[in-house]
Image 1 (tube, each protein chain N blue to C red):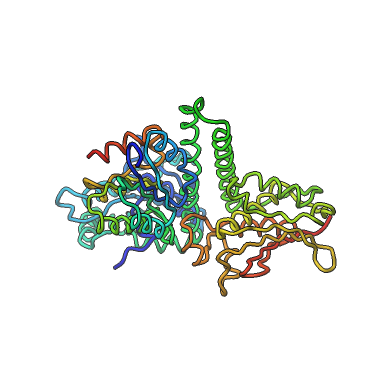
Image 2 (tube, rainbow over the protein chains, first blue to last red; image 1 turned 30 degrees about the vertical axis):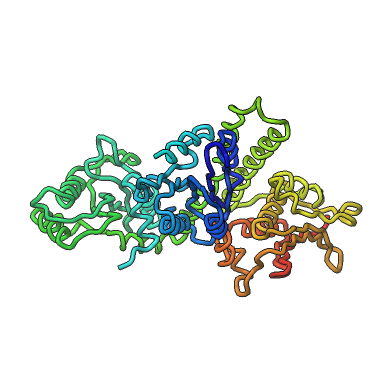
Length: 134
Length: 382
């Protein structure tokens, strides 16, 4: 077990957030990655001791945002409700390129929201620590 | 009634966006002349957008638009959106306007109350009733969101498509920009403690993200550009393929097999605009890598009579379903199995690649739909 705990990162474009993952690992977290909904389900079923899920909003399969507004249904939101039904108090950080001003409704005590462009890698571990300790 | 995508789009705009993105171009497409957005100036006097129709006797029929991004409801006897709209319409019709082109003071002949929201019948009756007292009621037209959607579709049929493209592009470009921003920030902090191979990896990542941003910008511009001038020069596929490959992320590059043999020994000379043809190759390569987890092969062939140089890009990915063989070349179209597999993708690559190649008197063809999928770039030999 790592010093700070196990984090599951779910993102279909892991390459674009690799620096965030690297920084978490440098700061003592163990990171498991999943790039699809199926992979995420598999990891959650197998792994124990996950302290936090960092979840992208738009994941395959399918459902891209409503083409004209960037809104619409996002796969990540459906996955979130699935996670909630099994792990009601597991902290989830929605980490997304979607404009978060439109998504505040998903936030609660265990669900937080950060737009990818609004944080630097070295700032993410502090956010993660806060969420885990809360 | 369900809310359509067009409804959602209009509802997402603020008043300023509504005027500039929708109303001004719409009026121009409807044949109004000298259309200007008038909002914000001291001389506005109720008019948000102004233009005129040229009459049969060379007379000018001036139209002022009172633009709103809210529902217009209630009655003019109470404070609210109906009262505010009435005041603006009265001002638009009563206060003369200085036509900045003719530098003459003119009066408005017609006022359009236009909103991206709804207009309740009670509000229309109330506003008309009040305007009737000064005989202005016949000069007012009401355009609510559903009428506005019809007008846009009738007069600017490509508007929705263009806005979709713009939003897709904006979304697509965010991922590499996040990659760039985070990698640069990471390197700034961790530069000295990273082993050389990690450093190399990060720099390679940055290079690829820059390449991806350029690729997306280029694709978007090529779709939007009306003319596509080309500057052909003597080259061969090999040079172009190697350049296109250099922008592919290393982990994907490992999956690409470039078939040498004839390709290397006897590369056929073609006449091609290097930058554009390289872009077309990148588009096909990007698709092959995106929709397949297996190896991708790039192979040069020639047609049976030896006059056309073919570059075949082959993958064992999801394949092209029957029935959409031509649709995949339409800008913005993504096959259902492609949409199901990845969220990203503008659906522009094949359209742009074909446009580029046709401009060279060549083409991009779907040779084989699946197992493996094969696309061929065809260019006349030099």
